[in-house]
Image (tube, rainbow, N blue to C red; front, side, top):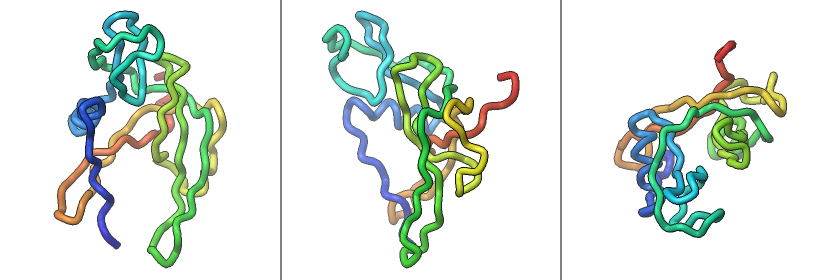
Length: 142
């Protein structure tokens, strides 16, 4: 089985990927109206400003939706769960990602509190390493 493809960041998303490599969860923030946004983009949907920064975010939220993905067995794939997380930082931001839990989704429910985790994987065919976002059940009382 070949390695995962390596992302090719554009100027808007490069800081997101760089932050993940440092195991940091960040969001783009409009410098004019302070609204957060994800995915990264050059223009604010709320005020139209083209000025922005990257801000540390909590990396916490709740599952808004989820699905079990069943890759082809001939490709050596195993089922895995992809979740869509509504962030605590701003409830109109939904961030997808793999879920660190049972591959059949056992125990998942809409509204389940989750937090950002990070997974070190091999990416590309040249053995490069990459850190990816991986959602996990939030620690109790967190």
